[in-house]
Amino acid sequence: MGISILSTGCFLPEKIVTNDDLATFLDTSDEWITTRTGIKTRHIAVGETTSTMGAKAAAQALERSGLSPDEIDLVICATVSPDVCCPMVSANIKKALQIESAATFDINVNCSSFIYAIAIASSMMQTCGYRNALIVGSDTNSQIIDWSDRSTCVLFGDGAGAAILTKDDRRGILSSHLDCIIDQDNMLYCANKIDPTPFSDHAVQGADTKVSMHGSGVMRFAIHAFHDAVEIVTQKAGVKLEDIQLIFPHQANIRILYSAAKKMGIDMDKFYVDIDKVANTSCASIPIALDLAATEGKLKRGDLIMLIAFGGGLSSGAMLLEW
Image (tube, rainbow, N blue to C red; front, side):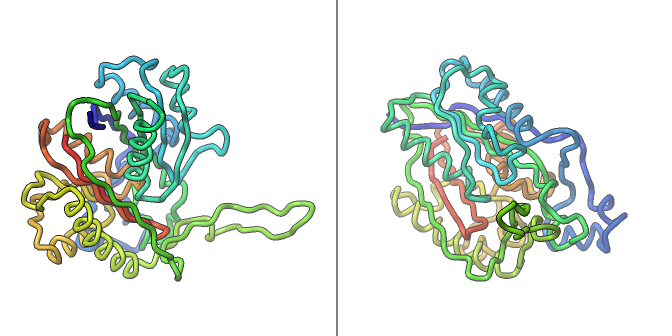
């Protein structure tokens, strides 16, 4: 008995922001953004939160699964932008779906979080006797980016994606790889706001609490991590690249995908790409792509697919599974 993806769901805010919209207050243009990132539009939350977006994506996945809320044994939310510190976002999602009793927690491994969450869930399903797990990736990046910094704010969007894992007679997850190397130079960084206390006047305010990134360094890391992850998960599973129907990479920058594909001799047709429409949605990136591909009819049962992510930390992860 394997652990497989039973169903998916996603939610994207109604508000769509184009590159031309950004050009009204930034020194940029549609051509500048498109040629450097591959992004044309992104969805931006207006009233939605990380919790509410996650709940809507999760509700869609639950409805498509045919399961009742009481059949969910585990809820994990992957996010870098929780709307609340307490309770955790996963608890808000659980409450919204009326899941009465299930182990519940959030994780933050930046943009690699969804793959980590699946790996953690599958391990808990094997050791704790859980049969069904709800995994959600949800991020409101618009709340943590500096909208005056064109090097970062053009890259991100908001949204949520979800998947339900179940034990069944398919092979399911075949292999996985998780890694994190030291980010010596803080190439990808976002501080929490720290207020002074009666015992300390130390505070972190202003731009430090927004995302900062050294793009060229992150790109070099991502291409290297991509190459290593592909080799490791295929070798572990005894699978050749040509046997894989579709690769779902983290949607960070189209140039990263082009460079990784060229380095490994992979045809870009093997990549599912939606960055042009949704931009970088951080923890939601891969589950949104999975759901869009499924609803577009690009996935069929028995397909071998690969998930690959890279992000702050500097973290990375990959997973090979049978759809």
